[in-house]
Image (tube, rainbow, N blue to C red; front, side):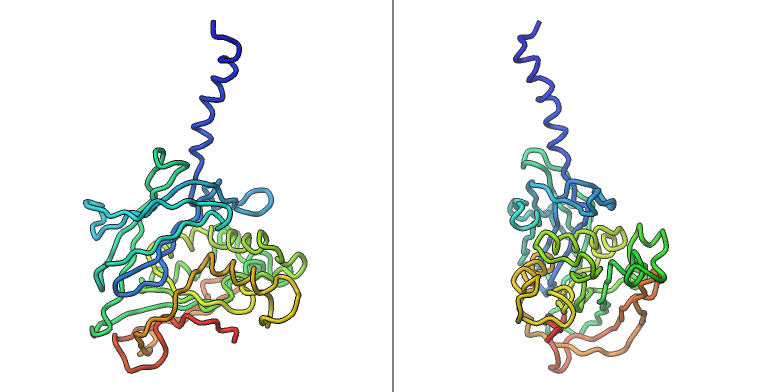
Length: 322
């Protein structure tokens, strides 16, 4: 017979590994700020597999470790790895690594390796991105743009009234992401109002946890996860994903500019614009976002050649709120 103290301890030893193994990445991965030779890879470790939220309507993060494997081969025959990264509460359990030394105009496959400890990890699904051509190359590119993703209007109608997204769309997310995915663009530009801190007006987000929750509920949608699994991104912020409607740096109304800016940067980190420039050539598709959940989502797909005469930096990574 086991001593009483050991008998009490044994069930805890058996349970602990199962509990520790509950590490997920419900928001998928992001490949941000592609250049000809680099990329920023990002994910967030979560307690739930998604897309369902917890009873409070949030998607909690969890501590753990992760790294990214990447390879030109979809079979990961000879993958390279980033250093191990720690997901902590201070950065909302986000892990991010910059990968340099990539080949221009090349498709790379990558995946998240994650778990509670380095000795207990598993591989996430394979994703991919394509680096940009060299500035001296004459090569076609296509991209899509989107903005004004009002989660509250999409899920519950404007101000909780009127038409809202279909039941299927409320499970899968904005239908336009499926439409954009079918275009197979080289990259996506989010031009601001990616989330709305001030919607719904009753109970608008003011504290840092409330601001972060807006990103959690939005990016757990399967259509967004699928789209960003194959489409690298650039991001800029506007007023609603900075503070509130028509906000600037002034005033004491919550959220102030510091938590608003830091919450955006933690989710959609932008690097300084590259010097390479380009200009649009011809539209290949155009659709508009609808809060009712139709496939018309504020996106525009365009093609361009590379390089072009100096105009605006490709990716237009700037704060469009002025």
